[in-house]
Image (tube, rainbow, N blue to C red; front, side, top):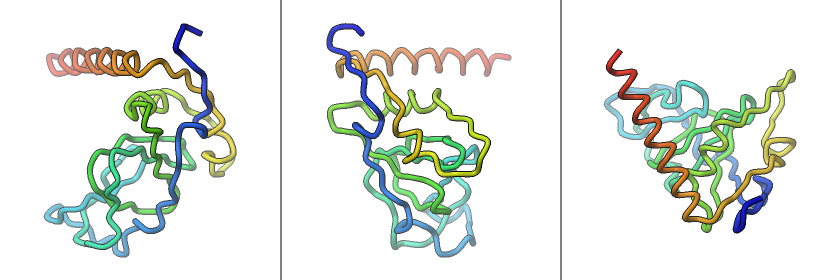
Length: 155
């Protein structure tokens, strides 16, 4: 491993929170409401609620679908649809966007319907470079995504 890099298990650098306190009471969503209701799956924002209690505010964070291992970086207040996710916070000395990128390219494919964070996913190892290198990797990846978006728009 290069100088200054280390290898950590996700559970050593990430704390998780159960989402029960942030679950919506009603699924009467309306686009006119202000608070997004999230799922870690492909749909991400599944609607908007007018509920004002139990809104998750401690962003940025990563939401992790405990059954599919999908994850999303979130930088705005939200509520959630179900308890089938974990809300993840990354250690202060590590860029959360770096961890989110790693998680987006790392999937566990299981053949059973079970929760993955505690039993398997949190045990995965992630290479952690120095903070300046984390930022360089994030910027390089974002620049590539911007180029890809431009190419896709031109098609």
